[in-house]
Structures are given as structure tokens and as C-alpha cells.
Amino acid sequence: MGMQPGIYQEEQAVRLVTEMNVTEGDSYARSIEALVRNARAGTYSVDTIDDCLVLAALDPASEQNYVRTNYVARCVIHAGFADPAATNDQETLLQALKSIEFTDWRSGFGSVLCIPPLLRPLSARCFLDLLFGRIQLHLHFDPSTFLRLCAEAGVRAGFLKKRTTNRLRSRFGWRKGQVPLFAERFWQAAEAGRGGAALAGD
View 1 (tube, rainbow, N blue to C red):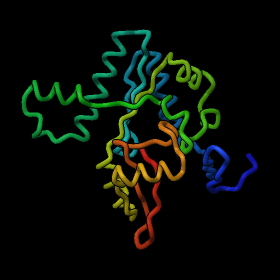
View 2 (spheres, helix red, strand yellow):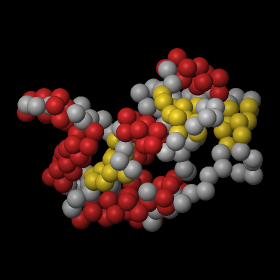
View 3 (cartoon, one colour):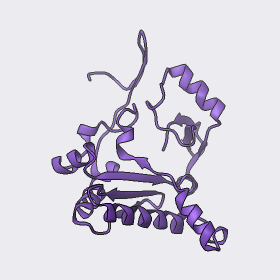
View 4 (tube, rainbow, N blue to C red):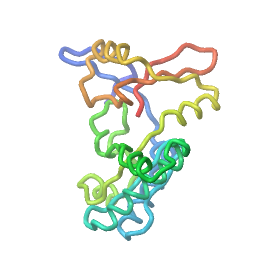
């Protein structure tokens, strides 16, 4: 783009420019490639990244494989993040599994903070399968585990109030869908002993 990182006030919008070195470690490309390949083959296609993000690749062409992978992903999420004592009977467990929400990988394409799709280190076939929905990649993020990992790494982090989030969105002119949120809130992070910076996180 030929622009230095920063926030630019334009006539009808605010442009946020960030400098980002895209690597496989940043985008989990190897895990995504493996999951998509397994989904095509009808084998196990669920993975957990950094103990707080669950990825599931589903093949809509096979109803049996789609339903099975969806159920397995919910079980993985429940086993990893839920309190076992809270679901001590079958009916409560089923309701807990049904209540788990996923985010579609494609929903982040319009975000100003996400890696542009064509810069992600994915093979052409994998990228096109995901782009056209031949394989669906669903994500589930657990904020409590994420904040614990931040604390262990010496990063002070937490979620801003909805009122503060809305004020920042209004100030910078971000429309719905432009920045990722979690429960309609931004998260704030800072190194220990330093001031915080408000960031969008999901």
C-alpha cells in the first residue's frame, strides 16, 4: 500500500494501517492444511491451538461426516473448557453441547485487523476449498484460557466494557464486521508495568 503504520483520517472513513510479517506460525497454516485434507478424506479433522482455540474442518458434501465432525468438535470444546461438575446428567450435557458457538473462518475477511486472505500461506486448493465453502472451517475461542495464557506470559489483558468498546468504534468509524469482537467487546493488552492498548480480539 506504500503507507506507514498508523491511523489515517479520510474524508468518509478511518483507515488503520498495521505492519505484519505473515508466517505459518501466525496463521496456523500447517494445521489448517492438515484439517482440510483430513476433512476431504473423511477422517478426524479437529485441532486445538495454544490451548484456547479449537479448529474444525467440515465437509458439507457428506452429511454423515459433517454431523460427526461437528459433534466431535463440541465434545473437544466441552472437555477442554467446561466445568465437568456443571454437566453431571445427560440432559444438561446435551444442552451444553448445543449451546457451543462457532465462528466461520470466512467471516473475518472484512476485518481491518485480520491477515488479508491472499497473504495467508495456504495452498491454492486449500484456500479455494475454504473460500467457496467446499470445506468449512469453524473456530471456537475460549477467552478465560486465553487470558490465563496472557498472564503466564507476563501480559496484562482483559476485556473492555461494551460502553467503552462502542465509544472506540464510534471514534474511529469502524462499522459492524470491520473489527473482530468477543461478546461485543474489545480486549485490552499490555506488557507488565506498561500502559495498555485497546485491541480487537476474537
